[in-house]
Image 1: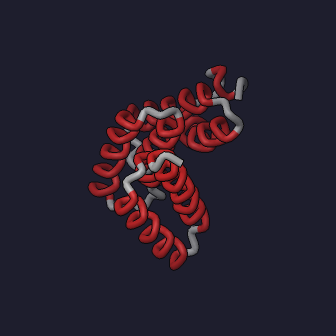
Image 2 (image 1 turned 90 degrees about the horizontal axis):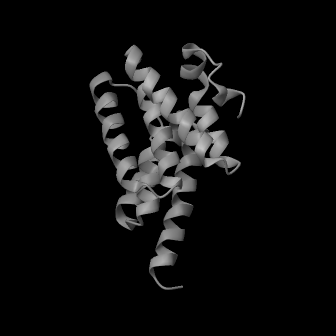
Length: 150
C-alpha cells in the first residue's frame, strides 16, 4: 500500500483500482491507507465527473469509515451515492449502505436490506454483493450483541 499511496498512481489508475486498494488496506488493518485510497478515488471521480465510478468510490469510502466508527460521515457518503445511482440508473453493490445498516444495529432496516440484496444478487449471479450482505449481517449481530449487554 505504501507504493499505491505514494501518489505515483495516475488518475486513471486511481479510478480503476482505488476501491480495491481501500478495501484491501482495511482488510489488513491499515485503516489510514484505506481511508486515503477511498477518499482519493472519490475525489478524482468527482473532479472528472465519472458518474460510473463515483458511487462505487463513495460506497467503499463509507464502508471504510464505518470500520473506523465514523457512521455520520458514512451516512452522508451513502446518501450521495444513492442520489448518483438514482440519477444515472446505475447498478452498484451498496457496500456502504450494507455496512452502515449493520454497524448501526438497526435490526429491521439491516435485515430488510441484506435479504433484498442477497435475493437480487443471487438471481443476478453477483457473488460479491452476497458476500457484502452476509458480512453486514455479521456486523449487525455483533452490534446487537454489544447493545444487549452480553
